[in-house]
Length: 513
Image 1 (cartoon, rainbow, N blue to C red):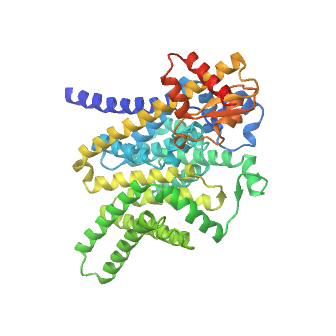
Image 2 (image 1 turned 180 degrees about the vertical axis):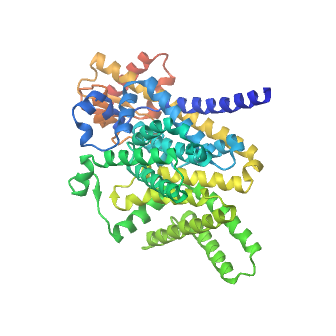
Image 3 (image 1 turned 60 degrees about the vertical axis):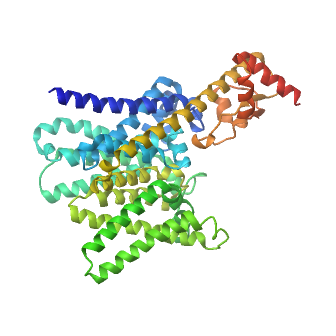
């Protein structure tokens, strides 16, 4: 009993640290972009005025960011709680459940070493977070339940829990559209499997009904009709091979693969190992040998082309994006082939399911655009889980655990330092604006202290001319000047208080007129 208690304390203590880490990030990352726009409305206005009927079907995600933009406590607790829950569910989903902590560490490292664009639009932007990260919670819950408790839900005693599943499945459709489509696909597959088995399962039935109700409610929003009728100035819907080529060659392959070298190289190395291992087993199969060597060639060509040649020797090559597109498609094809083979060999469907989910999640963007980095996050997360699952299959996680722990500490130190600087600068910036508003100086404009490392948080407008910021903080003076971070930071170091620093910054500005 004591051993079990110690293990439970260790496990929950570990995830509490994960919670604290993401809570610290949330405390320090400021509201930016659409966060500020949502901050000047309320849930009453959003639903009462009918705005929700025409904007989009992300009713749950939009509601969360509205609340978060008004309550700092809610923002921090929900940000930390949702991220911790997503990571926990993802780690729990991987086949080797006993290595929960190791799986979690690897998932965290892969997630936190994604491209700065992905990070900025999901973890560095609250409106992105409450839609793109929060949308992953329910799919992970339902897949965990199916994997570990499917047979339990065949018993009639679980009927009473079906209402909860139905409600959650409806709400799960009110985040981002491509994840809703994935939920619909999963619900349909599970229903097909249940009908094939000819055994009633209350989990599958409740999830199917709720997901389809939620999907209908989401896509009945007038915004999607406007997109179809080409009445939307921002989003459009169309399909052509030229458009697909453009999206794959200059957006999708970069956002998902090329801009994320760590996970891409890891996938290439793991796939290469699996292919070589299969070559040694089946040396007599000539066709299989040829296919394996072709797969190895694709892996090598993809890595060499994008990380060595693309921006160097081939910088002026007129068709470099065409080659990039072809190599990216072939790279994904190799993953699909090898994961299908591995799933058949191990009788474990999760390998092919994860790469299939990653592809399904980006296919909608062939039709509906624009496609930004945040649109690739769910697919990227699937690739993270795939890498962790493969490491478990190859027993690589246990072997490299000390290295993983060291890497995790390094990642935490980096982001803690980054968040501290961003948070400090953001708070000083806000205090300085309050100081200027109180003293109405300068008369014709306001000075905005630059918040550094803007590549890690999503801000649409320049800091000195951000109309969203002015609206949220009720700044009536339109004109603005940006004070570079290095400049005001130096002044701060040489002054003893904020008031003295603010006075000095204003003095320097007046001297430079």
